[in-house]
Length: 346
Image (cartoon, rainbow, N blue to C red; front, top):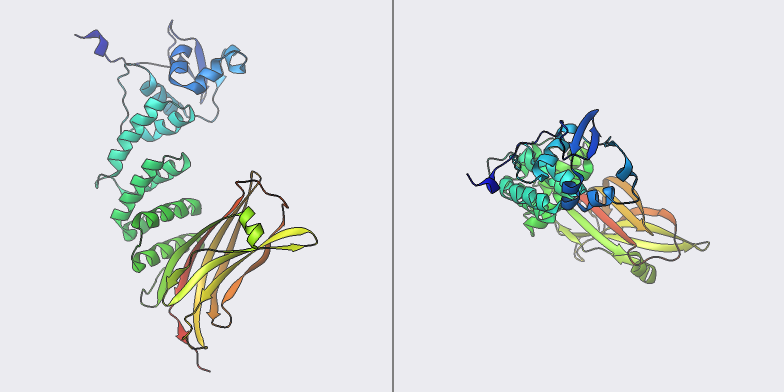
């Protein structure tokens, strides 16, 4: 037998002559070897380096870790271990591999998941979970693969998955729409309907001949906003009306404030009494000198006309800094649903 290929079954709950560090995880002792951990992980290398508190401690508590997860993580990180990355442990291992920056183990997990996620037999619920994990840990390629698979599954299957977290839905739907490119209006409308129904409990039934939906995404640098005073996002066309977002800055008593509006641009030949009702859920993230402020506004079937085509929130963010750093920005995402325009009787 080739001794170099012998796989070993470790038991990290029993101390051996090799072990020189003890972790306390869920009131259980886990024994390991500093040299092995430090060679695999720069985080452990720093932890055990001179001058760090953990270097001199007999026992290192890990209060935010689960024993089963940490045990699997060590098994798959240790050389010649019998345990390999697979369906039963990959979701336990990957977050820890990322936290401790164990690059070979991250690659193993990513390679396994990139292949697994594209298999049709893998349930959509798992793909949704995997997408959330990829988004939280900034795994770009895995996130893209999940979006591709979700597009293939279709929005009706996606609607059956119980996702109640608004941020998870938002990120997932953004990725799906980017993957689809010029997605069919029907699919866009279904996605917006799913999101609005699950997050703010609007009526779930959408008549596609009477309602259309889309997502407006808009990012602006605050420095350019200060110079131009106003900034318009790219429009989306629903029916024969262009909808876009507008962010503006004003000064009052030497203080800056931001205002936000949704604008509807009707065709010049449209009758003066033409109307369109709009339902919108609006998310605005203001990044200012390392701080993040979140705003959420709801428009419930607001009526837009040729003469009343702009509506929004004045001075929603006040006392904005007079000077801005290079990365300061405003991110806007709008889930927009519109009813079919009507001609009002005069």
